[in-house]
Image (tube, rainbow, N blue to C red; front, top):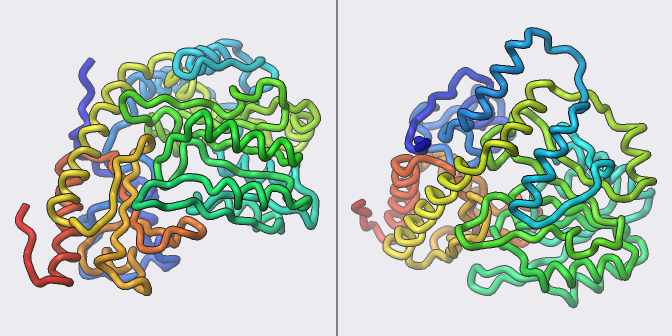
Length: 408
């Protein structure tokens, strides 16, 4: 089957965050916030899912329809062993990794799982360690539980990010640091950490009695030829690494609110089972199982399309924004571009691009720290949308600085 990734899908009026909720999410504003552009005129490159553009695979939609045709949407749990088999087979195929069935829990998304796990693991006056720039909800999960956040800035060498292990270990050695939330692959830079880097992260944390939550939601979204290694795979003898995975971003089904949480520690798993609200959306179960059972070919074609989109961005930036810093990321469908050379540091970039170019995007300030001057663009979109978004961005930046229009 050939999948159509160039289809333009209208999601206005469906309660979608991308089309109907951007004022609240990006600008913390009400629905009456005005722009020089009509809502339908915006190029939307902000929220980190394939919303607005790529259709959820037909195999998943069909599984949802079949479950819906059973007519009753009552309270549900995962009882059928076929669900674990689907998850386990996927992990074995792609990552040569397995875990016992009893370690598998599910949650209404990885973000809710983070909030719960911080509460279950950390005591008052303890701290959570992250590397920055970082997904903003890592910070929110700590703050929600009144736990102090400790940040170790990644080293940025012309757009290539690496871990400052001396700083990371110094902060992990603080006796009050009891948990590290680690993103593997990394969001927003798109780094696929090497096994050597992962080994060192794990060794540092475990040697200092620091739990690790490894958020691996982007693990399927690799550039062709790249390989993901689950952190827990490298440390089979420890039970202090919790792995969070989900097909939600991979298959554009984030709204179904379903993720896998692999908890090896029996004590923590017992707490989770006692305190976690365990009922599940029956449609989410069906969709997730179908993704793992039938999603291989769709994912293969998606990755090829994304590879081409990233190559297009790379060529475009080199030609029209030569002072910007951009590297094709090893994972994710998100482009992380440093435009410091074009815009003063004090500019509110999301508002600037929304008002001046009609482009909705997120900037580095939404990623805790160490991301100033960067914008993050969602490339999970048809090429025509991507080209128009880049044209608007580059025209605004070049016109502003040089008064020279960009011809695309």
